[in-house]
Image (cartoon, rainbow, N blue to C red; front, side, top):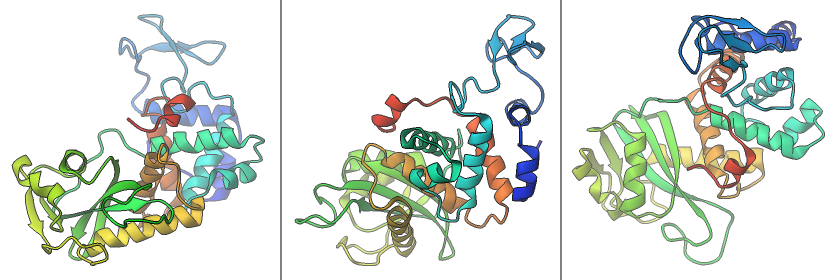
Length: 304
């Protein structure tokens, strides 16, 4: 099934009730028919409470169990409207803006909803970037006195990886890293880029270990001085990221939550050419039923 509403009118018509929203999630979660999460049996009956009761192991499961919607106190209609709003805005929407649009009373509830949707923006088992890939770092944080660039205090370091498509950016990956040392940078690169790929960097020593990990490292320029436009695609993505954080989220997020904002930016950037708001709604709703639940205490500590 790959059905999605193409207009706001279709969206309001198709998801006007909790039943229609639940049926849509069912089709997204089990497009080939029900499969029991415990024993993989394919037959079940629906209970009076709307749960699915496995005929073989008697396990009961709801359509929202094991998804980001698990244990929610909000109607699915509100969640669907939130997803439509999030994907429909070119630059996204802040938790405060979403709270106003949905008419919710609690900012904390809306903030938690946004972070759950950001978790769903990372597709399980997503593909790594393919070469050539430009890799650089940037610091996220407000202006502070003291040293700039690598080694700056009071800011959060983010690794930026961008596919080079004949001088144009392809897909991207962003990762918060502890430091500009190889011990932090190399694992982030390995998580982002396919093995044996060509990686283009400046001359920073933190990338010296790429060759021993099977990558082909191309040094664009030996110097690694801050301010030099060594890696234009990575620098372009960095500029867009910082403008987005300032424009949509009024500055820098707390370092504990930065990963979630980076995931949202990656989701948006990698789908920037999509002309269908409905298709983005479909993709995010589809991923929302394929990732596990997220609770507030997990968000507070940042992504592991």
